[in-house]
Amino acid sequence: MPFMSVRGSLTKAFLASALLLGSLPDCVMRAEAQTQMSAATLRGTVTIKGTVDLPPNAQVSVVLEDVSLADAPAITLSKTVFSPVGGQTFGYALGYDPSALKPGHHYALRADIRNGTSLLYISKEAVMGLGAVPDQTALVVEAVASPLPSALVGNWVIDRIGSDAVDPTTPAFLTFRADGFLSGTGGCNRLMGRVTASGNALTFGPMAGTRMACPGSRMSQEDTFFAAARKVVGWQVDQGTLLLTDAQGDIVLTLSPNKTNDPHKNLQNPRIRKSR
Image (tube, rainbow, N blue to C red; front, top):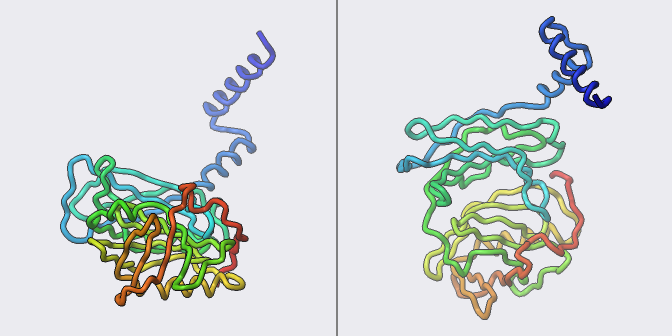
């Protein structure tokens, strides 16, 4: 018998004997203890706001994400999917590794309810924590509004804010999902929120995001973006360019399609992690 097979057999026999005798070696017990300590469970609830209309095969999803970096996609740390049991509020347990959490990073909880690939309900307000999982674990989901027009859906680079061109080395983009979820950055912090559109009318809902201090023009550019977004009431696509307009019809944001389909690619900016 090869040496490795003999050693493997002896190891299995040793562990089996130790288990029967109730005395594992200290090194094995320490490894087991470390494994148990690396896992934690976040418990909370998901509540449907308003009328409940769930099909039999609906599934609830709760996700914990690192949303710290403005120039990178959110990183999923943990996700749980389960069938809803009850009327309007459902309990969840989300396992995660506390050692994966970093000081100064922002972590967000979100939830949705789907029937297959169809999105039925989604959390519209970000629940966030700094350097730790959020303290608030009660999530509220609302029925998905009418989907956005297909011409709006996708990744867009912000070219101009008002009449001022955006610095090409500063990340500035928006991503519109068909369900109305919005993500992106105005130049410094990662943002997320909702957008609604009907016909040629468009409005941004409340937006939340990370809170980092950025040097130079990045911070002022972001402030200018938020001021412009609050004025938006309409939209139109002109020769592939997305124009967002105010009540007077003036263009406040000019965006172009991200041809790489990756809003984070080729954005030459440092990763600023200093919290406000």
